[in-house]
Image (cartoon, rainbow, N blue to C red; front, side):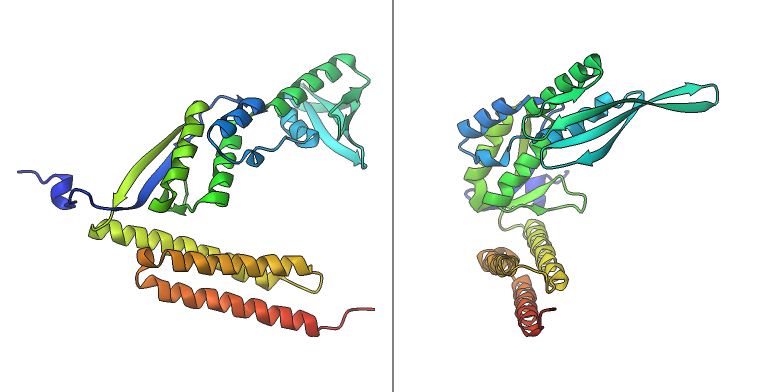
Length: 288
C-alpha cells in the first residue's frame, strides 16, 4: 500500500500552524494607478506604497516605445527641465546612418513635452501620459514587496526568491494582500505549514535563520561603509535597524530554536561594530 502524505507527516487535528509558504503573481496586464490606489484603500492597506510616477521616470519608460528606429539620449538637465536628443537611425546596405532628428524638452514638474516636430511631440506626450497613468505587473510586485517590508516578514525559501515563508502571526495581513491582488486580477497562493513535523520545523528554522542572518550581514556592510561624511541621522537609523533586527530574533525565538544563540551573537557584533565606528568618527578631527 502506498504511503500518503499524512502517513509520512502525521498531523493531529487542531495542530497549530508555524505559518505559510506564499507566492504571488500580478498578471501581465497593466493597471491604472487610480485603480491601484482604490484597491489598496478597499483592502485597508497603505496607499503610500504606490506613489505617483514622476514625469522623468515615466519618460524613461516611454522611451522604450519611442526608441523604435531612433536613439534617445539625455543631453542636459536643470531644476526645471530635462533635454533629450533624438537621433534617427537608418540602414543603407551594410552600413547604419545617423541623423539628428530633433531635440525634445521635458518639464519635470508638469510632464509637458515640447519639440520642433509636432507629430513626434504628440506621440511622445501620449506615451508619457500613458506611462504616468498605468502600472505594470513588475510595479505591482514591488508594491506587494513594499507592503510586506512595512508590515510583515517574508523569508525566502529558495535563493532565487519568488516563494516565501511568512510566520503565522501575519496571517490577517496576508488576507488583505490576497484581497488586493484579487481586485487587480492577480493571485496569491498560500500553503499552510503545520507545527510538529520534523521536515517542516527544520525547514522553517533554516529559512527564518537564513533570512535574519542576511539582514544582519546588511548591517555589517552598512557600518563598514560609514565614513567622516556620514550624517548623524544615518548613524541613528542604522542603530534603529539593528535594534529592530534584535527584536525580530527575540520574537522568532521559538521558530529559531538553537539558531537563536548564533543570531544573538551576530546582532551583538553588529551593534559593537556600529558603536566602535561612531567612536572612531567622533575622535577623527575634521579637515580644515
